[in-house]
Image (cartoon, rainbow, N blue to C red; front, side, top):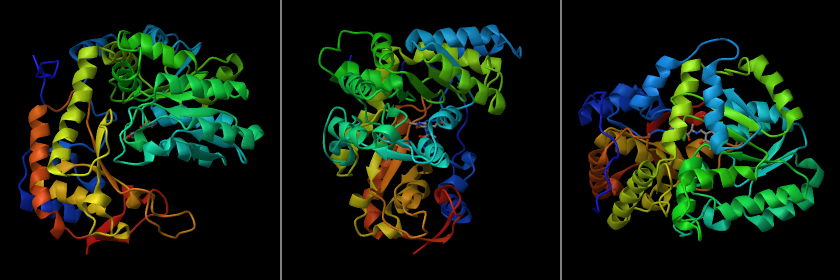
Length: 454
Ligand code: F0G
């Protein structure tokens, strides 16, 4: 059969409230044209993020009931720990309430003034935690990874020459080498197993620990299996184990590839570092056998980790994005190619070329998509990155709009509806106008700023 179906049936449903276009125009105007300001029940298809928004399986809900809420030594922790170690063979697994809490602990240990921390691309909370410690984060992704139209099977790869030069130059100032799989900020693009091994090799040659941000590890492993030479015949768990066996630690948001609505962890091999990390954990998150989570959350994650590596699921998951990207390309919509693992990224700067970056073409596209179809997306461009710490404003490197797909939540007819919205948009895009920011906070303005239509 050619049709790749959703490999599940639906036992429990959440109704979507249908809204009219005039209603949506009023609602988004009231929210100051900021999509973060909408009530989610006024959204038809919510593609704001794939984080914590996925559907849990019947087996996960059953596991929730088994959750043991003991403060110390809960068997739910033992099951969670075993599920993590089955895929990621680290000595110490430290549960946190989500990914950024693991990052905060990691950089409380490794950060500090004068330190330099390289990655392919740091996610914004990772960078935030690095910078809050006084350290600097640097992004060394390959050149192809910064060019939306350029095709490359592993656009998330680290530039190895740049990393080597960086390690030579900053030698003593580098406490740890990081790598994000998949590279979310660069379009959900994967990193090859060869690149993961080479980054580990370089880090170790310079005597540095190597830590993977593993949020979308299963999607990354699927890309390795389907795109990397010699990997096709291997199982996903085998590939995942290979990826992590060369690392000294990992941070994880279990809201992505662990099918959790909440959760995360920090894993480490080094006993002394793990002891230090647990000290931070007890102060900020909780006792080491629950961290920032309830026993029932740990159970849901343990079960989720066994489901996320299923090939039927991953085939359907990745195919969803490819399906949308293929049709958008056929319509002439410029998108980041090839399709990423968790999201489709529209190049709004190229598509709405009549709107200059400082009038926020990504915001114009995201608002129009909501007004026309009730779809919520996220601007990743000049609104998000345009304000410098010194108060000046500059165009970001790209003006993208991200359509991130919650796991197991929407069906193909939702994808077709989205594509119909883009057909409508294509016909009227030249009439779209840019925006002006009328109110913004000092930091992370994209979450709360208010706009006016120009
Ligand atoms: N690292 C990556 C690569 C991420 O994508 C995220 C979250 C985090 C770390 C932080 O994890 O949210 O559990 O604290 N990304 C979400 C997103 C928010 O929408 O891409 P968290």
